[in-house]
Length: 194
Image 1 (spheres, rainbow, N blue to C red):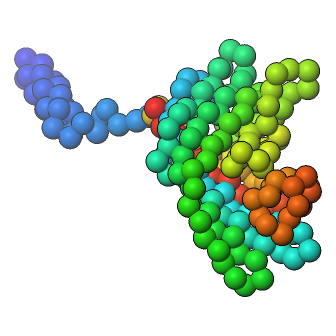
Image 2: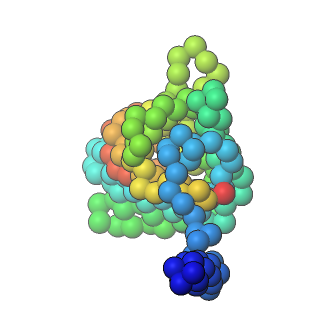
């Protein structure tokens, strides 16, 4: 009888502790990458930090804010669609001089994706499909990028990807003629939430 009463007391105490835990038991849980890469997300962060070389080296930083639209994952067909509008802070440093600008922009694209492991996902344009590359600022296209996953919770999905490819900036940077493919390296940061 004494053991039964002790058990009841402990059970009641634990339940009370759970209720008084400030809702911590309802905090987002870590999920598998397969679970994370499914459904619609809103963007919380899109930052690009690039170094490009055309005659001289230039640095391009783009920071998004005030996002509208979605990033939608179709887990069954392994497709991801980017359809985002945002305000952009743009900083271009050339030859020690920095020019800044603010404008509205977009990120669009329909790509295939593959899960490499629980911490890496690849977005790419699959031949023979209606895939379209990620297009930044209406001009710079990325057709293949592997993202390192830094967080995959039931309500958020954070990634960073390394860019190392030739990009057409199509007049975004005045000294670079449209149609010129420019060697570019750098990082892309993307944070999403449900």
